[in-house]
Each structure stands twice: as C-alpha cells, then as structure tokens.
Length: 124
Image (tube, rainbow, N blue to C red):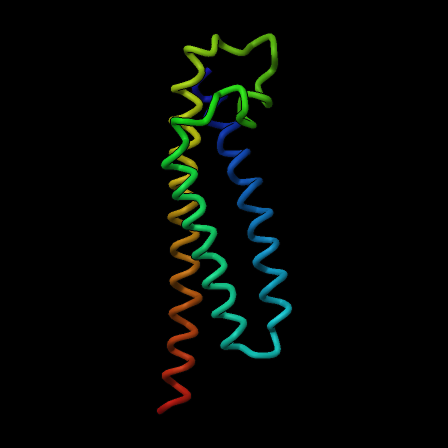
C-alpha cells in the first residue's frame, strides 16, 4: 500500500510541477527576444516555484488527508482507514515536494547563473 501511495504522490506532485513549468516556459518564450531577460525571468519564476513547493512541504502534515489528490486517486475499495493513510500520504507528499523543490532550485540557479555570466561577459 505504501508504494502505491508514494507512486500516486509522485504523480500528483509531478503533474502540478509540470503545469508550473509550462507557465514558466510560456513566460520565458514571451521574453525570448532578450536572452538576459529570458534567463532572468525563468530563473526567478522557477525560484518562486521552489519556494511554493517548500511552503507546501512544510504544511504537508496539516492538510486533511481527504482533501489531497493522492486520496482521490486511490481506488475506493483499496483505501486504508484515514488514521493509517494520513501519515503515509503526508510523508510521501512531503518527500516528493522536497524532491521537486530541490530540482527547481537547481534549475533556477543554473538559469540565474547563466544570466549572471552573460551580464558579466558583456561588462568585460
């Protein structure tokens, strides 16, 4: 049961991050005429997504289990009791929120680092 919950938690968080990445990519494409603005807007938007994921991870224990997408994705006939599922779902959600926040932080740092290198290169 725990592996099923973790799989659904990963799918749920990945789907949300995918939609966030689509929005960030749209903003970046809109500013593609200026490479520095392209990288900076993507970097700051991805950093914002990272912070949102960190806040969600910090609050994962306080979200009612029946309001999570993971609970909704579980087939009704194989759902464990709420008392059993609540800590499993909270832990799985927190783990994947932190994992995706880590990836978002790396992507943001690469984008902002490239923008910084581009800006410094123009000064030299």
